[in-house]
Length: 620
Image (tube, rainbow, N blue to C red; front, side, top):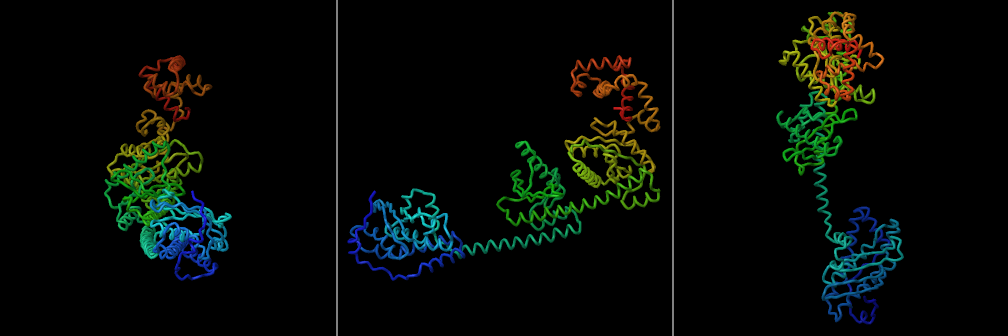
């Protein structure tokens, strides 16, 4: 490493013809710097000052490079003096290592009293980065002209950063050896065509303007459909026709509610693939997958979605999706999809408000019928208003669901949603019914002839309804009781009691229990003679109940589970989570108390009937 010392005689003996210089006050240069930063921003101003300094350095040294120099290093050493004479800074070179044949350079020194740094401090205060951009550009341009290849100067210390002086290091690009900072600095020396950027910005603004115009147009169309309450299918069709992209709207369970640009079969196929993909993601992460923002999802090579959640009452109520290609998605597409989701939310709000109003009317009507506080003429009038045909015979269904909600508010919201879904199910099946709520049970009064419109009979329809509830509301467990059929609507209270009796017996069953199938129990209940039902039960099981009353009815429950499991001891033990030996002891004890063989076919039948009667009487 060579410590540089000026050889004044060498520099003074050269006849140097400098270009005319224009001198400006340092404060004016500072004002120019401020205007640049205010107008162009810090980064673009830095690039402007670097290129300005570069051009100054090139202009100063172009005539010098064309002169004949016995020692090219003398020209290199002339750089600091020429830079000092510009009046912007005093240059104090420290190290100069150069090999013109190999094209390598290491030139290093200090800048003293940099006016550029002082003006920056005066106008903007101290900086986190070096600010002598025009000085760096001047050194880079001058040395690049001398070396015949690109040289990059780097300021490593700066008084604007709080340092005692400014320090610079100059090397060829190759000698910097891929330094990341230098590579980033090189980008500032490239021509910054503001006109091109303005053109690009204009094009972006034009696209955004067109996107906003398109979004506003779709917004008006969508909300027109919401105001006219044309339904989700109309919303999806408007979205499809405007966007020319297939659209699908699904509920929270992944079932298609509406679609555009596709057939019903295609919509079902896409929804099934979506549910499978969602289930797979949940299994991978072992938690429920939530879509709470607009996302691009590649479900399969044939199905790529831009999907956004539809919120209702601060919860996800469903999803609105565009079937797209990822490269074709724009910000306008996301905004439009968000507008569509908002329109869907308003549709659900309108629907829920209308349903709640109608449901209050229907529920009140059903309660009045059950309580017999309404005349037949009033029944006919109000049935007409709610579009319920009074065609006998009538029957009633009672539904009960296992409760999983932690608060009363959640339970009420869940029941409201359940009743709303039941209402939609009946609409889909084109079956008329009056839905109500009594205690914790949901009850529905049906006119049996209305089932024929959809080619249902009573049993097949009730099974279909039960399967729908069990599927949609997994893992909740449902019990369903179905009354007999009666020709008078005034007998609705009898139908309700029959459905509740069937509902009690339905507990533990995987299918609806029909009152007509209860046999002797049904007959006993129909007589309204509960004492007779009780006498029948106690005649067979009285000794067991008396013995068991102080033991939480453990033996009676064991007997019930044993008969429910087909008198199979091993199945019963598993069902009760009980040891087989313990179960056998209990069965032996039951035989002793009842003084009969519980495995006898005749005895089993009578005992089972008695147990069913006890269930109805709430003894179990």
